[in-house]
Image 1: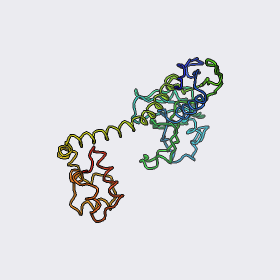
Image 2: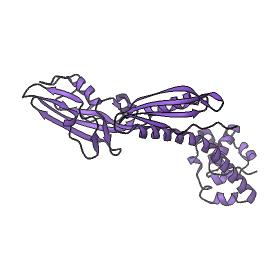
Image 3: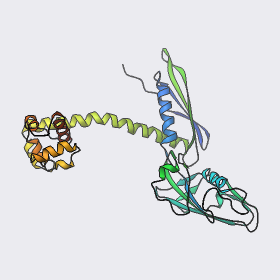
Length: 318
């Protein structure tokens, strides 16, 4: 008996940035499993763009005020964080803002380049209250995943005069789901998964849903390939052993691999070097008994050697 697969999602469009996805026929218990996995990926793993730093003329730190500007610097930064961008490419982008006189400044006043689009141009940034008022800034926008705290970027070089900002990269604003039972055949405990996704407008809900699904598929695919890779290595080693081609493979590039390129303990490396063993080919001509007789080698060292040779498709001499 096999676990039945759910039906394709039914999509109900609520608005341009919001949609409801209904997946029916989920095997009992799989509604919660799929819903929780999707939600975590949607909120943490989708790429997006956000403000990561700002330079404001005449301002040295975020605890400052600007003459004739209603908002202080902290409030201006909070307003900048509300602006959503779409960055075409993975390169860091710069945007500028220069305003004088009495004016309510909005995101639409920011001058961008061809590689950058502002999604919500109506966001309020600051209000200038006097003819002498002036606000000039340079905004740094970067792409990233999920949430990027300033502390995570401390190792990077921050430009002089720039104020680093915590960045909310994820393009998904809301993602929540519900699970209810439904009838499939004679059973009434199958699950119906209902997903509500709202984005910031830089991508559509459908695109976010597909990207999250692909991320999960890619991760689970890795688990299926582990067994295949180990099986292939064992089959190649056995084939070489039976056909007597092990010596030939040693003479090829793999056999010439130096032991210092192996990931093994210093103790094992020193023991092998002291015995005059320099390459993988030298090792493959030894058997376990030969290795155990080397001073400083033990069962643990032999195990390290086997593992290192196995990665090259080689084995110890029988």
